[in-house]
Amino acid sequence: MTAVRSDRVMSAVTRFTNWLAAFGGTSYDHQSFYAGPVGRRAKEWYYSRPLVGVAAVAPMVLFEAFWPAARRFFWKKMRLPIADAHYAMGFALLYLKTGHASHYRRAVDFLEVLIETRCPGFREYCWGYPFDWATQKGTITKGTPLITTTPYAYEAFAAVQAIDRSDRWLEIMRSIAQHAMNDIEDFPVSRDIVSSGYFPGDRHGGVVNASAYRAFLLTDASRRFGNARYGARAEKYLNFVLTSQHPDGSWPYSTEDTRDFVDHFHTCFVLKGLAKIEQASPHDGCRLAIEKGVRFYIDGLFDQEGMPKPFFRAPRMTIYQNELYDIAECLNLGFLLCGRFPEMDRSTDRVLDELLSIWQKDDGSFRSRRLLLGWDDVPMHRWGQSQVFRSLCQLLTSVASETASKGG
Image (cartoon, rainbow, N blue to C red):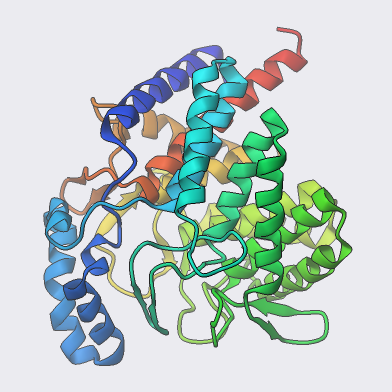
């Protein structure tokens, strides 16, 4: 990455942070159409009574495709823990890049919000969604901890704790690890292979990225806190992820039911989890799975223009061409694996160029989706804004470290 591009990224990040300070911490969301009582009931019918359900969700699908701003009529703006965690990580990285104390203070502010918005009714620290989420397996009530959300908070506290060495953050991380160890169901496949539940009380299991998240969190906690029990459990979730990989290198969303679609950002989640585990401790199974997974990822999840496409195998009609969340996770994965796969490095560079050239708006925020006709310009913290911010801050920090190591 050239110095010119580094300046360009810093300019984009500065514009974004100014926008964020003015915009505030709440936003609409990808799920806003379905978070309120009307949309949620329509989605429940879609899963339980397909003929009625298709008609019920059709207006919301049309709004999403042609009038994205209609979200405001279905549900309120929300504070989303996944976004707050990514913003905390981004500002911590920005502090490491610049040394500006204001960035550290903003990172801490986001941690304080996470502490306030933890799931009530649980002894240990954990996070979920602030709305009732209608899924194919039933409705998950707001405040239910999700293993796909909580690890981001763990990483956010770790990012700031690496700066200030606060015992307060460390104890929260220890509590998060206890939650991941004890509060979510297991679904044994064999003695050494276990699928993680998605949330406490889950009766199904089989979601591959859930096991990847849990494996990473407990792998890190095992090393950080010297707890071998965490590591032994993590190995079983990791084995589930490794054995769920298809011969072509892809992973289905779930192994247990008809949710066998293969999409962009869930593939990134799994590959990121494996890469972080491998970084913590060399693991031949991770290395081989990453190599196969990246080959599939490059061949199957980019369109003819070199941009992330939503699905390799889609579960339904897609009403958009590209979305910010896929771009964000492409960059997060690309920067994490930088230098290992030349073709992936080239893909990451192409995506970064387009993000900075086309997707950032004049106000500093980013477009949310390229629709079949036009754009979805509704800024959604969880659905890409925060993840893109974190990825760009990671890139800036990595470039600074590389330059320092070369003595220039």
